Image (cartoon, rainbow, N blue to C red; front, side):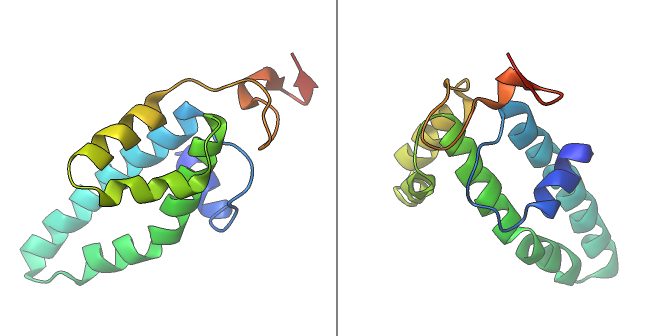
Length: 119
C-alpha cells in the first residue's frame, strides 16, 4: 500500500526513476480498487465511482510509467507506443518488466540506494 501512496504523493513528478516493484505494486492496488469500485457501481447501477477513480489516477499512472521507463533507460515518451494496436501493448509490457539499468541520465539506480547509502 505504501507504493500506491508514494505514487499518489509524486503524482506530477515525471523525472527520476521507479523500480519494478514500485510500479507493479501500484498496478496491483489500482486493479484491486478498480474491481471493488466496479462491483459497487454494478450494485448501485451507476458508473460514476469507477469513472472518477480512473480519472483521478490518470496523471499518477502516466508519471509513474514515465519513471519506470526512465529506470530501463528509455524516455517517458515511449508510453505512446501503446497507441499501436496489439503490438504496442506487447512492446510496452516488455519494457516495463525489464530490470533496472545502472546509473543513467535519469538518475542513480534505485536498487543501489539503501538508507541513503549508495551500494
